[in-house]
Image (cartoon, rainbow, N blue to C red):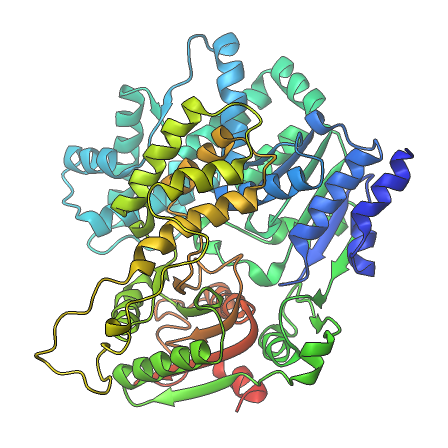
Amino acid sequence: MNPVADAEALLEGLDPAQRRAATALRGPVVILAGAGTGKTRTITRRIAYGVATGAFTPSRTLALTFTTRAAGELRARLRQLGAGEVPARTFHSAALSQLAHFWPQVVGGTAPRVLEGKARLLGEAADAVGIRADQATLRALAGEVEWRKVSCLSFEEYAAAGRPAPPGLDVAAVVALQRAYEDRKDELRRMDFEDVLLATAGMLETERGVASAVREQLRAITVDEVQDLSPLQERLLRLWLGSRRELCVVGDANQTIYGFAGASASFLLGFAREHQDAEVVTLAVSHRSTAPVLDLANRLMRGRPGAIELVPAAPDADAAASPAPVPTVAGFDDDRGELAAAVAAVRADLAAGIPAGEVAVLVRTNAQVPAVETALRAAGIPVSVRGDAGFFELPLVREAIVHLLAAKRATMDGDPLTATVRGVLSSLGWTPVPAQRPASSRDSSPGSAGSTAAAAAPAPDPRERWRPLDALVRLAEDAGDETSLAEFLDELLERQASLDAPVADAVSIATMHAAKGLEWTSVHILGVAEGLVPLVHATTPEQLDEERRLLYVAVTRAKRRLRLSWAARPPSRFIAQARAAGR
């Protein structure tokens, strides 16, 4: 069989720009990928095509990204494309692996253990310097520790940076506390996640043998979501590359929404200037959103640095026969009215046949989530809160993980993953088709005809037990049978640690940040008002631009239906663009 002819099958179904990107295998490459333009599809096909044609050696190729979920998705897709030997990792995972390997020969012994969190040591540091800090203050201080380190700043440079201190503290106190935190951490011989990157970078900078070995191993690197790169990660990436030029970066400046944590699109925006011979490919055809949604999104970002004017893919016959709805924009007198309208709109989505898992309600802050969750649950609508520990705290999910871990010890290598997971979870009540909700409980939600205060409590809905089990089954299906049960469990435990719950058959509630990388048929964005979008403390041009980009990310999560609303306060200054495309 001709390997090149076989490789050509990997390019089937790609649009012209995606195909150009997938076949650009040599030298520096930058893929400017707008929201919904098939970024992950393109880069995984590019890596698999490189492997199939012999341009890439799997063990010497690395795909980098920023979250466990994104790395898991890359691994799953590469396995499906026959390039499963190519590692896909987060920056932290790749650095930790190198640190563990080289530490014994460079420093001696084993590397220090990595802290699971900073709160306890920050609390001890606060006591040591005489600062009273509650949990909210400790979270804010952890953010300052992380920002200083990923920005590669000394304590003195941090103090001069003009960062606002947490309430009740001044910059001098924050610096003193950070020093005490570092001292305490060193006493315990521990590292935090930022130290992993710093130590790896330091080792590469000072140990020529280590740097040579790493660069010999990493012959080709692909970096996804490169607009999220921090100065520390950029430093580490350059050290990994050395003088090599086999680098492909992929990103969208419009989706830079982690500036508060040190991320910057400067590396992406300056890539073509730094590498003047780079292949530059722009993906502008959205395979996700309809023309009306894209029109609104484009109006929000037009004229901004790195903005990509998105265009819709040609609709299929069914879509062409059903005109896409125009996004709606509505204001309400109070939050209660806005919430009631949102519940009614979600009900309408479900009544129209949109699956619950294809509907989302997005808000700007975590503080807005409980009211939305309470209202939807009171209406009998199943919900899943993204970025919440709730899924993995469910006793049933914990029990399922225990059963799967037990099955790992009894499972033979080569046993199909999907069948194994289905079999294990069947013993806990999973079935291919969910049990029907009892008829007696279908009309028992508040406001239903015939409901009374004296009515008996509704019977438990068996679907509430089925949904989390089915979410785990679908996670296994997505991973594919090329994945072993051990690998699946490793990814599941990583998800548990990062609160990355699988999408359940329920309406998603998420902050705009947590919605990044996801998509739904119908999206309802609440609270698009001054003080929330943008947040009241976003005052600088840079902060306001990031708030605009955050709304853009929320808007581009919608595939077909989009609804924006606000209440009580004046509408967001960004609503002018929304009104121009809505009604």
